[in-house]
Amino acid sequence: MENKTVETIQRGLEQTRENLAHWLEATPPQKKTLQCCAEDGLPLVEHLHVIDASLERIHEGTFGVCEVCHDPVDDDLLRMDYTSTVCLGHFSAEELRQLESELELSQIVQRGLLPQQAPTIPGLSIAAFSRPAQIVSGDYFDFVQFRDGSHGIVMADISGHGVSAGMLMSSLQTAFHTLAPLADSPLEVLERINRLYAHNINFTTFVTVFFGRLDASNGQFSYGSAGHNSGYLLRATTGEEILLHPTGPAIGLMEGFAVRLEQVQLRSGDALVLYTDGLTEAFNAVGAQWGLDRMTEVIRTNAADSPEQLIQKILLALTEFTEGSPLADDATLVVCRVA
Image 1 (cartoon, rainbow, N blue to C red):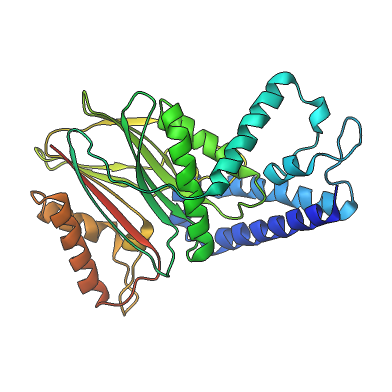
Image 2 (cartoon, rainbow, N blue to C red; image 1 turned 45 degrees about the vertical axis):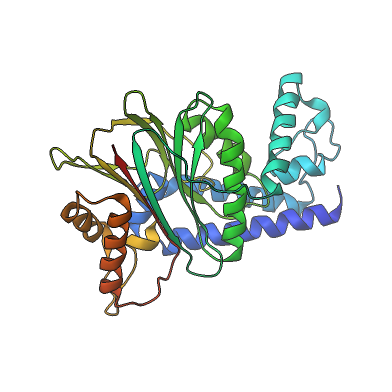
């Protein structure tokens, strides 16, 4: 194995460790619980142990050596999964087929950005807003289709913002457009994306994702939420408020990844709101946070408005609260109204 490859992997691991350790130290407990789906953040500590073990093997000179034949593990394999400890010659036929698929997908993900288009989804009217904190945004929302033609809604937030987060957002969009048409469930896509990114040396941060699928024939909305802010559903007929809480950890945040699928029935007139924390975590001049409660109050007060009108009133209320100060983080908002 070339020394250049080891140096690249080492730099990536050190950057990843620094980012995750800083997040673990600086993140408030409530947000840590939200994104880890655990109160103590211990699953992330396990992920840091894996990184530390790899760095230790690099320092010892044993990194990238096959445990079976003691030959070097293929460079491309290590770049995709730095925990690999067996060279390609010892893979089974099934493992080789899986690896070939992952390598092809990895190349696709790196290639670029597919154009984003808001679809016509039967039974839904949709409006969206997105504003980057810098020139490039790390927020991502999109609309995709599953194998059976049903529609999916994606809302994601890459940790950090600026050019690096924007580049990752672009590759994430490509991954969703590549995988969703081959899948039947949001979980299939989220699990595949996590496998793709978890040990990829080019991925040095983490991503929260809300991914839902609408069955237009019966209004059933199924979703998986990887550490993302709770979606908000307002019932038109009863005024009931339902929070669509995270169902698993953020992508790339820990070793184990288990996101469960939840379902909710969408009814005529209901409003579904998805957002990133750049909105709810905006502060005013005296250090008060806008918060989910203030946003949902605007939605309740204007429950009969169209999605476009709701977004305008939410943004107006936010601007009044912050007194026009620029948002510190990327902010994205998608409002769906059931016809």
